[in-house]
Image (cartoon, rainbow, N blue to C red; front, side, top):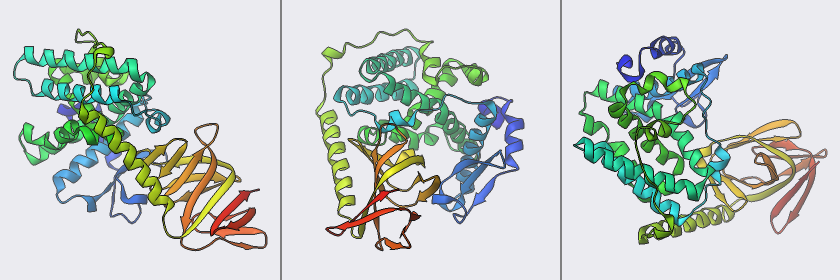
Length: 369
Protein backbone atom coordinates (compact mmCIF):
# COMPACT_ATOMS: atom_id res chain seq x y z
CA UNK A 1 0.00 0.00 0.00
CA UNK A 2 2.71 2.47 0.97
CA UNK A 3 4.29 2.15 -2.46
CA UNK A 4 1.10 3.40 -4.06
CA UNK A 5 0.83 6.26 -1.60
CA UNK A 6 4.08 8.19 -1.71
CA UNK A 7 6.43 6.27 -4.00
CA UNK A 8 8.79 3.49 -3.05
CA UNK A 9 11.40 5.82 -1.55
CA UNK A 10 9.33 6.05 1.62
CA UNK A 11 9.40 2.33 2.40
CA UNK A 12 12.90 1.98 3.94
CA UNK A 13 12.37 5.03 6.13
CA UNK A 14 8.95 3.90 7.32
CA UNK A 15 10.25 0.46 8.17
CA UNK A 16 13.11 1.97 10.14
CA UNK A 17 10.80 4.28 12.05
CA UNK A 18 8.19 1.55 12.56
CA UNK A 19 10.46 -0.14 15.05
CA UNK A 20 10.23 2.93 17.28
CA UNK A 21 6.44 3.36 17.41
CA UNK A 22 5.02 3.90 20.89
CA UNK A 23 1.38 2.92 21.37
CA UNK A 24 0.33 5.24 24.17
CA UNK A 25 -2.61 4.70 26.53
CA UNK A 26 -2.44 8.35 27.53
CA UNK A 27 -0.33 7.72 30.63
CA UNK A 28 3.02 8.79 29.18
CA UNK A 29 1.94 11.27 26.55
CA UNK A 30 1.41 14.83 27.72
CA UNK A 31 -2.13 15.78 26.71
CA UNK A 32 -2.73 12.35 25.19
CA UNK A 33 -2.28 13.69 21.67
CA UNK A 34 -0.97 11.78 18.68
CA UNK A 35 2.40 13.17 17.71
CA UNK A 36 5.91 12.48 16.56
CA UNK A 37 8.86 13.12 18.87
CA UNK A 38 12.60 12.74 18.69
CA UNK A 39 13.45 9.99 21.14
CA UNK A 40 17.20 9.54 21.52
CA UNK A 41 17.48 11.66 18.34
CA UNK A 42 15.28 9.23 16.40
CA UNK A 43 11.79 10.02 15.03
CA UNK A 44 9.27 8.13 17.17
CA UNK A 45 5.51 8.04 16.57
CA UNK A 46 3.16 8.21 19.56
CA UNK A 47 -0.46 7.22 19.03
CA UNK A 48 -3.09 7.30 21.77
CA UNK A 49 -5.15 4.19 21.05
CA UNK A 50 -7.91 5.33 23.43
CA UNK A 51 -8.95 7.92 20.85
CA UNK A 52 -10.00 5.33 18.26
CA UNK A 53 -12.49 2.48 18.17
CA UNK A 54 -11.09 0.41 15.30
CA UNK A 55 -7.70 -0.80 14.11
CA UNK A 56 -8.19 0.68 10.64
CA UNK A 57 -8.20 4.17 12.10
CA UNK A 58 -5.28 3.45 14.44
CA UNK A 59 -3.30 2.10 11.49
CA UNK A 60 -3.97 5.22 9.42
CA UNK A 61 -2.95 7.52 12.28
CA UNK A 62 0.28 5.56 12.76
CA UNK A 63 1.04 6.01 9.05
CA UNK A 64 0.27 9.73 9.40
CA UNK A 65 2.76 10.19 12.24
CA UNK A 66 5.33 7.99 10.54
CA UNK A 67 5.16 10.24 7.53
CA UNK A 68 6.14 13.18 9.73
CA UNK A 69 9.15 11.10 10.74
CA UNK A 70 9.90 10.58 7.07
CA UNK A 71 9.71 14.34 6.54
CA UNK A 72 12.25 14.81 9.31
CA UNK A 73 14.62 12.35 7.68
CA UNK A 74 14.16 14.12 4.34
CA UNK A 75 15.13 17.46 5.88
CA UNK A 76 11.79 19.22 5.37
CA UNK A 77 12.19 22.98 5.90
CA UNK A 78 8.94 24.49 4.63
CA UNK A 79 7.43 24.85 8.10
CA UNK A 80 4.88 27.58 8.93
CA UNK A 81 5.70 30.69 10.93
CA UNK A 82 3.31 30.23 13.86
CA UNK A 83 3.59 33.92 14.74
CA UNK A 84 1.77 34.68 11.48
CA UNK A 85 -0.92 32.18 12.37
CA UNK A 86 -1.60 33.68 15.77
CA UNK A 87 -1.74 37.23 14.37
CA UNK A 88 -3.77 36.28 11.31
CA UNK A 89 -6.04 39.31 10.61
CA UNK A 90 -9.81 39.02 10.54
CA UNK A 91 -10.69 40.76 7.25
CA UNK A 92 -14.02 40.54 5.45
CA UNK A 93 -12.43 40.41 1.97
CA UNK A 94 -10.25 37.50 3.00
CA UNK A 95 -13.09 35.52 4.54
CA UNK A 96 -15.31 36.07 1.51
CA UNK A 97 -12.66 34.97 -0.98
CA UNK A 98 -11.47 32.10 1.19
CA UNK A 99 -14.97 30.67 1.47
CA UNK A 100 -15.36 30.90 -2.30
CA UNK A 101 -11.99 29.31 -3.07
CA UNK A 102 -12.78 26.32 -0.86
CA UNK A 103 -16.01 25.77 -2.79
CA UNK A 104 -14.08 25.96 -6.08
CA UNK A 105 -11.50 23.49 -4.76
CA UNK A 106 -14.22 21.03 -3.83
CA UNK A 107 -15.93 21.38 -7.22
CA UNK A 108 -12.61 20.77 -8.98
CA UNK A 109 -12.17 17.55 -7.00
CA UNK A 110 -15.72 16.38 -7.68
CA UNK A 111 -15.83 17.42 -11.37
CA UNK A 112 -16.94 14.74 -13.81
CA UNK A 113 -15.22 16.23 -16.87
CA UNK A 114 -11.76 17.71 -17.49
CA UNK A 115 -13.33 20.94 -18.71
CA UNK A 116 -15.37 21.36 -15.55
CA UNK A 117 -12.37 20.54 -13.39
CA UNK A 118 -10.12 23.04 -15.17
CA UNK A 119 -12.74 25.79 -14.89
CA UNK A 120 -13.09 25.22 -11.15
CA UNK A 121 -9.31 25.17 -10.74
CA UNK A 122 -8.92 28.52 -12.48
CA UNK A 123 -11.60 29.98 -10.18
CA UNK A 124 -9.86 28.50 -7.14
CA UNK A 125 -6.45 29.92 -8.05
CA UNK A 126 -7.91 33.30 -9.04
CA UNK A 127 -9.61 33.60 -5.65
CA UNK A 128 -6.49 32.56 -3.75
CA UNK A 129 -4.20 34.91 -5.67
CA UNK A 130 -6.65 37.75 -5.08
CA UNK A 131 -6.42 36.95 -1.37
CA UNK A 132 -2.66 37.36 -1.63
CA UNK A 133 -3.15 41.06 -2.45
CA UNK A 134 -5.14 41.39 0.78
CA UNK A 135 -3.19 39.07 3.10
CA UNK A 136 0.40 39.18 1.88
CA UNK A 137 2.66 37.00 4.05
CA UNK A 138 -0.30 35.65 6.03
CA UNK A 139 -1.27 33.60 3.00
CA UNK A 140 2.20 32.02 3.13
CA UNK A 141 1.26 30.67 6.56
CA UNK A 142 -1.64 28.73 5.05
CA UNK A 143 0.49 27.45 2.17
CA UNK A 144 3.16 26.20 4.59
CA UNK A 145 0.63 24.27 6.66
CA UNK A 146 -0.79 22.67 3.53
CA UNK A 147 2.71 21.72 2.40
CA UNK A 148 4.00 20.29 5.69
CA UNK A 149 0.87 18.82 7.27
CA UNK A 150 -1.34 17.73 4.43
CA UNK A 151 0.80 15.14 2.67
CA UNK A 152 0.56 13.33 6.03
CA UNK A 153 -3.24 13.59 5.91
CA UNK A 154 -3.09 12.41 2.31
CA UNK A 155 -1.11 9.33 3.32
CA UNK A 156 -3.45 8.81 6.27
CA UNK A 157 -6.56 8.90 4.06
CA UNK A 158 -5.02 6.46 1.61
CA UNK A 159 -4.02 4.10 4.43
CA UNK A 160 -7.49 4.19 5.96
CA UNK A 161 -9.20 3.58 2.62
CA UNK A 162 -6.83 0.69 1.97
CA UNK A 163 -7.45 -0.99 5.33
CA UNK A 164 -11.19 -0.31 5.61
CA UNK A 165 -11.94 -1.08 1.93
CA UNK A 166 -14.28 1.90 1.86
CA UNK A 167 -15.25 3.54 -1.40
CA UNK A 168 -13.19 6.53 -2.47
CA UNK A 169 -16.09 8.98 -2.02
CA UNK A 170 -16.88 7.63 1.45
CA UNK A 171 -13.29 8.12 2.59
CA UNK A 172 -13.52 11.85 1.79
CA UNK A 173 -16.65 12.52 3.86
CA UNK A 174 -14.85 13.80 6.97
CA UNK A 175 -12.50 16.04 5.04
CA UNK A 176 -15.27 17.35 2.79
CA UNK A 177 -17.33 18.65 5.70
CA UNK A 178 -14.28 20.41 7.12
CA UNK A 179 -13.52 21.98 3.75
CA UNK A 180 -17.00 23.35 3.18
CA UNK A 181 -17.97 24.54 6.66
CA UNK A 182 -17.41 28.28 6.25
CA UNK A 183 -17.77 29.20 9.89
CA UNK A 184 -15.50 26.43 11.15
CA UNK A 185 -12.82 27.09 8.54
CA UNK A 186 -12.62 30.73 9.64
CA UNK A 187 -12.67 29.96 13.37
CA UNK A 188 -10.12 27.13 13.17
CA UNK A 189 -7.63 28.43 10.63
CA UNK A 190 -4.84 25.90 11.11
CA UNK A 191 -7.17 22.91 11.12
CA UNK A 192 -9.02 24.18 8.05
CA UNK A 193 -5.79 24.10 6.04
CA UNK A 194 -5.61 20.33 6.55
CA UNK A 195 -8.64 19.66 4.36
CA UNK A 196 -7.67 22.13 1.63
CA UNK A 197 -4.16 20.67 1.45
CA UNK A 198 -5.51 17.13 1.26
CA UNK A 199 -7.69 18.07 -1.71
CA UNK A 200 -4.67 19.70 -3.35
CA UNK A 201 -2.80 16.40 -3.03
CA UNK A 202 -5.71 14.47 -4.52
CA UNK A 203 -6.02 16.89 -7.42
CA UNK A 204 -2.30 16.65 -8.13
CA UNK A 205 -2.75 12.88 -8.26
CA UNK A 206 -5.15 13.38 -11.15
CA UNK A 207 -3.36 16.20 -12.97
CA UNK A 208 0.32 15.40 -12.35
CA UNK A 209 0.59 11.86 -10.92
CA UNK A 210 4.39 12.08 -10.58
CA UNK A 211 4.31 15.08 -8.24
CA UNK A 212 5.29 12.92 -5.26
CA UNK A 213 8.60 11.89 -6.80
CA UNK A 214 10.01 15.42 -6.68
CA UNK A 215 8.10 16.76 -3.67
CA UNK A 216 11.07 16.72 -1.29
CA UNK A 217 13.47 17.96 -3.95
CA UNK A 218 11.60 21.25 -4.37
CA UNK A 219 11.30 24.39 -2.27
CA UNK A 220 7.88 25.09 -3.77
CA UNK A 221 4.73 24.95 -1.71
CA UNK A 222 2.14 22.29 -2.51
CA UNK A 223 -0.22 24.92 -3.89
CA UNK A 224 2.48 26.39 -6.14
CA UNK A 225 3.00 22.98 -7.72
CA UNK A 226 -0.64 23.00 -8.75
CA UNK A 227 -0.69 26.67 -9.77
CA UNK A 228 2.08 26.09 -12.31
CA UNK A 229 -0.25 23.76 -14.22
CA UNK A 230 -3.16 26.17 -14.63
CA UNK A 231 -3.67 29.50 -16.43
CA UNK A 232 -5.64 32.00 -14.35
CA UNK A 233 -6.51 35.67 -13.88
CA UNK A 234 -7.10 37.20 -10.41
CA UNK A 235 -10.34 38.80 -9.31
CA UNK A 236 -10.62 42.56 -8.93
CA UNK A 237 -10.94 43.11 -5.18
CA UNK A 238 -12.75 46.45 -5.48
CA UNK A 239 -15.63 44.69 -7.25
CA UNK A 240 -15.92 42.01 -4.55
CA UNK A 241 -19.36 41.71 -2.99
CA UNK A 242 -19.21 40.71 0.67
CA UNK A 243 -21.95 38.30 1.72
CA UNK A 244 -23.97 38.60 4.92
CA UNK A 245 -22.50 35.26 5.93
CA UNK A 246 -18.94 36.63 5.87
CA UNK A 247 -19.95 39.63 8.00
CA UNK A 248 -21.75 37.32 10.42
CA UNK A 249 -18.67 35.08 10.70
CA UNK A 250 -16.46 38.04 11.65
CA UNK A 251 -18.94 39.24 14.26
CA UNK A 252 -19.27 35.73 15.68
CA UNK A 253 -15.51 35.16 15.96
CA UNK A 254 -14.95 38.57 17.57
CA UNK A 255 -17.69 37.95 20.11
CA UNK A 256 -16.42 34.44 20.82
CA UNK A 257 -12.91 35.71 21.58
CA UNK A 258 -14.24 38.39 23.90
CA UNK A 259 -16.36 35.84 25.77
CA UNK A 260 -13.44 33.42 26.16
CA UNK A 261 -11.18 36.12 27.64
CA UNK A 262 -14.00 37.36 29.87
CA UNK A 263 -14.65 33.82 31.11
CA UNK A 264 -10.98 33.49 32.04
CA UNK A 265 -11.05 36.81 33.86
CA UNK A 266 -14.06 35.61 35.86
CA UNK A 267 -12.58 32.21 36.74
CA UNK A 268 -12.85 31.44 40.45
CA UNK A 269 -9.57 31.14 42.28
CA UNK A 270 -6.52 33.22 43.06
CA UNK A 271 -5.56 35.45 40.15
CA UNK A 272 -1.79 35.87 39.94
CA UNK A 273 0.05 38.33 37.70
CA UNK A 274 3.78 37.91 37.09
CA UNK A 275 5.92 40.67 35.61
CA UNK A 276 9.60 40.54 34.78
CA UNK A 277 12.10 38.78 32.55
CA UNK A 278 10.15 35.85 31.03
CA UNK A 279 10.51 34.06 27.70
CA UNK A 280 8.12 31.67 25.93
CA UNK A 281 9.81 28.34 25.17
CA UNK A 282 6.95 26.25 23.80
CA UNK A 283 3.19 26.05 23.35
CA UNK A 284 0.43 24.38 21.34
CA UNK A 285 -0.25 26.66 18.33
CA UNK A 286 -3.64 25.05 17.70
CA UNK A 287 -4.90 26.08 21.13
CA UNK A 288 -3.93 29.74 21.33
CA UNK A 289 -6.46 32.58 21.10
CA UNK A 290 -5.16 36.07 20.33
CA UNK A 291 -6.88 39.32 21.21
CA UNK A 292 -4.96 42.55 20.71
CA UNK A 293 -1.57 41.98 22.39
CA UNK A 294 -2.81 39.18 24.63
CA UNK A 295 -2.55 35.44 24.00
CA UNK A 296 -4.67 32.91 25.84
CA UNK A 297 -2.90 29.56 25.92
CA UNK A 298 -5.73 27.13 26.57
CA UNK A 299 -3.72 24.07 27.63
CA UNK A 300 -0.10 24.82 28.40
CA UNK A 301 2.90 27.03 27.86
CA UNK A 302 6.56 26.53 28.71
CA UNK A 303 8.14 29.64 30.20
CA UNK A 304 11.75 30.42 31.09
CA UNK A 305 12.09 32.39 34.33
CA UNK A 306 15.54 33.16 35.73
CA UNK A 307 17.17 30.48 33.57
CA UNK A 308 14.66 27.83 34.68
CA UNK A 309 11.99 26.44 32.35
CA UNK A 310 8.53 25.76 33.78
CA UNK A 311 5.65 24.03 31.97
CA UNK A 312 2.38 25.57 33.08
CA UNK A 313 -0.27 22.94 32.30
CA UNK A 314 -3.37 25.11 32.62
CA UNK A 315 -4.97 28.08 30.87
CA UNK A 316 -2.84 31.23 31.05
CA UNK A 317 -2.96 34.69 29.49
CA UNK A 318 0.29 36.16 28.19
CA UNK A 319 0.91 39.80 27.38
CA UNK A 320 3.34 39.93 24.48
CA UNK A 321 6.64 41.79 24.77
CA UNK A 322 8.79 43.44 22.12
CA UNK A 323 9.43 40.11 20.41
CA UNK A 324 7.27 37.06 19.85
CA UNK A 325 8.93 35.01 22.59
CA UNK A 326 9.24 37.84 25.12
CA UNK A 327 6.55 37.98 27.83
CA UNK A 328 5.67 41.22 29.62
CA UNK A 329 3.07 39.73 31.93
CA UNK A 330 1.74 36.27 32.71
CA UNK A 331 -1.72 35.85 34.23
CA UNK A 332 -2.89 32.56 35.72
CA UNK A 333 -5.56 31.41 38.16
CA UNK A 334 -4.58 29.13 41.06
CA UNK A 335 -6.57 27.00 43.50
CA UNK A 336 -4.25 28.03 46.33
CA UNK A 337 -2.79 31.45 47.04
CA UNK A 338 0.96 31.97 46.55
CA UNK A 339 3.03 32.04 49.73
CA UNK A 340 6.41 33.49 50.71
CA UNK A 341 8.94 31.42 52.60
CA UNK A 342 12.52 32.55 53.25
CA UNK A 343 12.25 35.19 50.55
CA UNK A 344 11.02 32.72 47.91
CA UNK A 345 7.51 32.74 46.39
CA UNK A 346 5.85 29.32 46.08
CA UNK A 347 2.84 28.67 43.84
CA UNK A 348 1.21 25.95 41.75
CA UNK A 349 2.56 25.29 38.28
CA UNK A 350 5.62 27.50 38.55
CA UNK A 351 6.68 26.10 41.94
CA UNK A 352 9.11 28.74 43.21
CA UNK A 353 10.43 32.08 42.01
CA UNK A 354 12.23 35.01 43.55
CA UNK A 355 10.52 38.36 43.53
CA UNK A 356 8.27 40.81 45.37
CA UNK A 357 4.70 39.74 46.13
CA UNK A 358 1.90 42.26 46.67
CA UNK A 359 -1.76 41.42 47.36
CA UNK A 360 -4.38 43.97 46.28
CA UNK A 361 -8.14 43.49 45.96
CA UNK A 362 -7.70 39.69 46.21
CA UNK A 363 -5.25 39.77 43.30
CA UNK A 364 -1.59 38.77 43.63
CA UNK A 365 1.10 40.73 41.80
CA UNK A 366 4.63 39.35 41.56
CA UNK A 367 7.53 41.40 40.23
CA UNK A 368 10.33 38.97 39.44
CA UNK A 369 13.88 39.64 40.51
